[in-house]
Image (cartoon, rainbow, N blue to C red; front, side, top):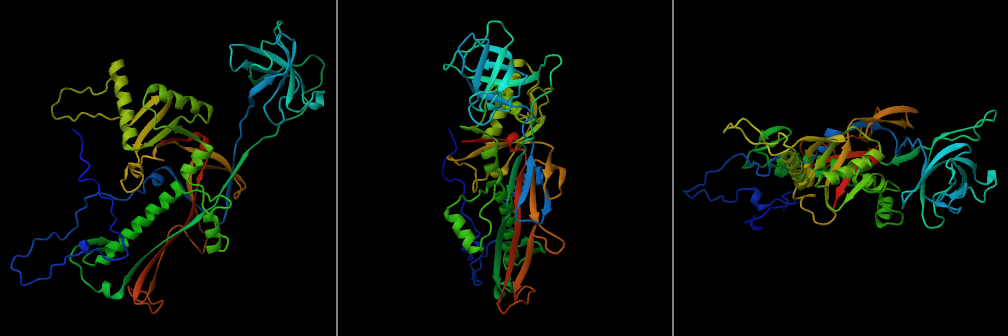
Length: 467
């Protein structure tokens, strides 16, 4: 047996531009002696409908005064080349190698470890020449002399090699190291976008009493427009978070770029949201989500190669969360751990879920409502996101506005603000109703505006789990 598809989950919105008949009592026949009993207060059948909780928990909000936010992140400390091609035949004492592209940054007299990418062959050598400065054909080449007497163990043209420097060695009475290495930080930038919404109610409707008790910013009452205005604000706050998660930058030549540039006189066209940042600069698990320890070991191995952050939080949809619980429960059963053990108390609930586990790193698990909501990403079969791994803590970056290193959360929202204008969340009223006297319009317009961007620092430490 399984759940029937009908009746199912209603995703029809009630936030339309016109009043719906099911929002009001339409039976005004007071001559009818059989009047229905009515509940004055609405029943919250969908619970807390807001999904704006993720960024509140994992990010900070910092003011900015610019149209462009820039920062730099550290590059790798060591250089490792893969797909290196041997240019010398096997068993030669002195061998020549070519990196796949670019200029080789190895230096003369550095010691290098070379290992085959297809066989068990490996060797250690000292570099005797690099690039055209040492008489080689191109700047992609470096020459080595092997420490082992048998020479090169690599077959020319039939295998590739991985190489990295582990030190250096010089003869007595020789000059020092030739050349130096410069730091290679990576530069990133993001642009804020302007997000708007509006709620409008006529002056006549504001004077009309309602039949259902509602809650609004001004407290409880029978004025239906208070509910609609309050829900518009809640919806806008959800948009603020979802925009930072889902936003993408408009590609050059795209219709969106042309439309937004024309409409705003050359304004911003998109921004880099969280999913786009991780998909472009981070790690992506394709095909669902890990369900076994071997799968998570693959994730741990990737984290080892990235920032190796000790604590991470997994924000998951329901299916991913249950898969982690089942995986950990299976390990507990096999290993005889304490999963499900209790003192045979008949009144004690059996906890079949896990909130955290340790596998190389500490992983904390939390449900992400946005991924479960039936009106949003919940239940998507194509392009769905099942979860996101977010590193905990802060990272150090060079803030180009401050001109100094600064500690920042891996995720933080930058909103436009200065001493005179704060665009974090602006709300104002126009019209001639509801206390406003700004025009002859017989209505109240409640305007909402925010200008913000999400900075995803160290995206290489994030993992996106998607279909």
